[in-house]
Image 1 (cartoon, rainbow, N blue to C red):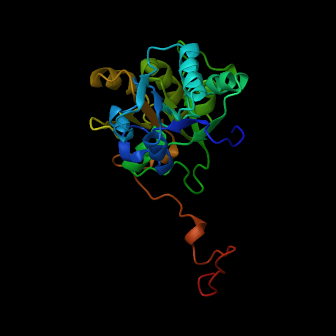
Image 2: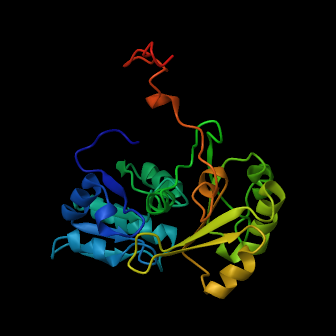
Image 3: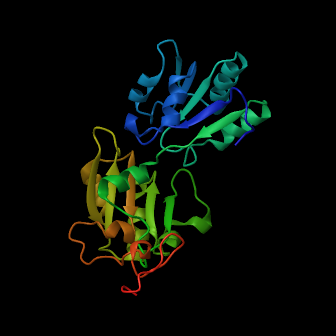
Length: 267
């Protein structure tokens, strides 16, 4: 985070789509802005309803980095309150770092307001807990290699082999690769959920298996705005999932912690 300043450029996580899933701080940033630069290909335009009628709105979908930075820098230079809207949370696949670096070079202060990512909105809809006691305690957010490569150490097959819960972004067009990685790590019949346009009016979910993911994705017609969820925490909520996961010790009366002693009659 840049140093505190009276008028920083605000990078705002707009949430996954539903205008009500923007944070209170994010909504205040939009409502108070004189200039909003937003990712029009991803951000729900309904979120712009928070903006004042006299606020200037700039869709960055067709702009290059230098043009986006120029808009923010010029606005800040005129003393305007500038809000830069990113979908979900800006720290995930938001190409935020290069914008911050450019602003730093120009001496323009910035502040980040976090947002709700689609992975967590999807979990809320499905009732998924990604970190199940004694089953998996790690949650991996990643993507498959496509036009944009990923480091060799983060190959999807290697990450899936950890047995953690997975949220795979930006990979609907790489379904065969995702299918192969998940089948190798979890088995061909492992449950997989595809979440489309989470929290938008047209949101949808469908369940498939690691093996059947490519053909089911093709059949659905979903090619973008999809999140692929897999791993133990997701499988536990799949239709027909059998057996209950181990319970957390947090609420176990026989387990003591800093706020509650163990009950002797339960120990």
